[in-house]
Image 1: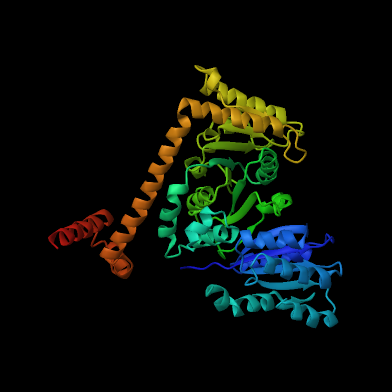
Image 2: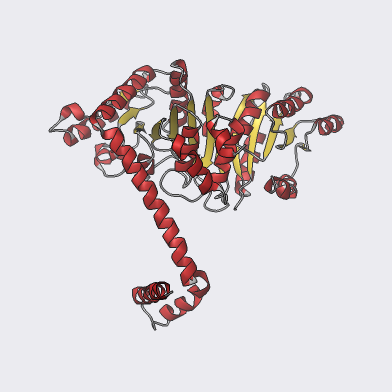
Length: 135
Length: 318
């Protein structure tokens, strides 16, 4: 069976700065992944439910408002509630280094800050390919 | 508990996982479809098609709202194209429908076309069956943005809405064969544009020629603005009137029989092709056959007819 990796890219919270999210969605498309793009101003609940319906392997969250410490863990909690905590969550945006350990502890498996080369994101996804293919 | 039983009970994770199985040609796919098949055939399937940027997703969003107001559960399959280069895709249709993301009565699934050329994905028909068996009353299939020949949605929908917008050409385009012929309802979106009335007149003119003998059978043409909601209630009403019409005339039943026939043809063709490929040892011998053709020692039809004849002989002798 030919497994196609599916990735949700969404923006929780209220900021409308979606250039980063669109950039990463397009780059992941060019890398051969199927990217579900939900757009801006999504509630954590909407993101989690979308992830379940779309049966994605990864959820990528982009946020530039500073509310990442609240909203990223809330997405993880909502995924758990949907019994979908096998979905791998990563994040990006303007996130201070000091906040990263807390996000990692909450279950965000990778955080990509501004200037990260796209190949690092692809390497992260490929490093998890076996894990998502075995489920 | 089996996946099929969970689907029939409406379990969201099961529905979503089944669609992944179908898309990826999972080895248990055929058994799964056969298990849910007795529970299919209850939903009404709408196809929504039209050129890129016509407003299909925004219109779908509006129609979901109308269906929910009347208490129906709605399943949506929204197809977007896969890249011919990377195989990847941006699935962005549901962005316009995210207000329904947390509604238990709505299930939205995005599908990449994965190289299939008919305006839908090769697995869209089976995905419709999953939503049908799961108890969704209305299933909406939104095609990729189509041109003139992507008409496959006709074979899986009870009713087709063709969404048109101003600015894509004159009445000669409306006269042509293909996509213009498959609409049951013609929806002129972006009705606030200056030239929207003109395209309505052109479509009405072409339909007038087609139904000159029987104007009562002429398809409805509706002007809407999916963005503002203008005209959507009328469209929704017309859609149900049209459904009643084709139900009472027997057209709907005939369409559903045709759909089953089409599915059997597709399955038979795929299975026979796989079988012949296997028995001819096609992929392994292809290089040597190409050499025979390249050096003009063999001709293409003669070569294949000869191989297939000897294969049939071999199989009947066994």
